[in-house]
Length: 63
Picture 1 (cartoon, rainbow, N blue to C red):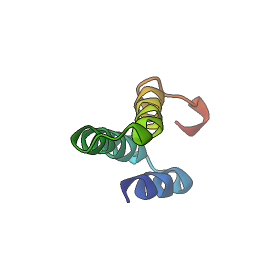
Picture 2: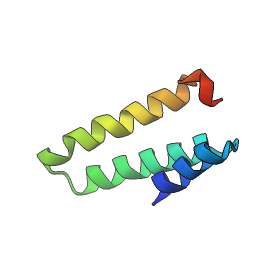
Picture 3: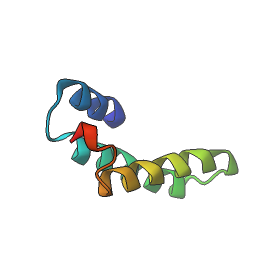
């Protein structure tokens, strides 16, 4: 749900969407760690990718 909010923030051009993306990715990592399953490893990679992209301000066209 928070990923949808972050996506809506990107589409609307707001400045709060990176925080929403970080909350979504970090909560996703916590939940995946709490209920670990090898099938969720792709989701872990995607969450880490979102955190890395926001931390590096990538892509610059969105900022």
